[in-house]
Image (cartoon, rainbow, N blue to C red; front, side, top):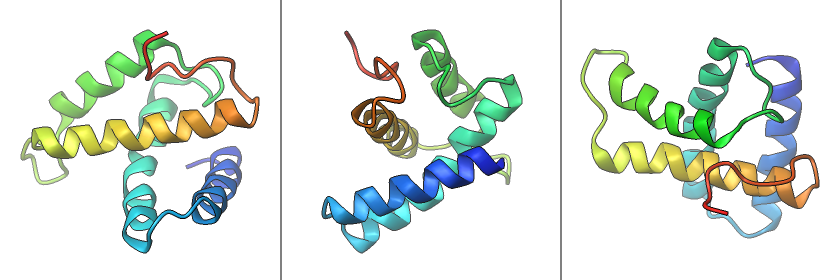
Length: 106
């Protein structure tokens, strides 16, 4: 995670806490979003430049890449990663840092 991502991630987690996310919900965000940042860094785009195609490709990347031990993620885990990215992009939109959430249909 680069410095820009660390900064916005910390602000997002604080916002999530203020919005009433449970301790477990915050733990899930902390464990799921770094994978999203890793994906973005791997394709060389900023969190502010994500397009619908990138969101679709992120899901494909999760399906193909799988876990560190070589096992595939379950459908539920893929959904959890996608939900975390969706909520994060909702935050970016709420903060007027992006115009649309690429993880949601228009």
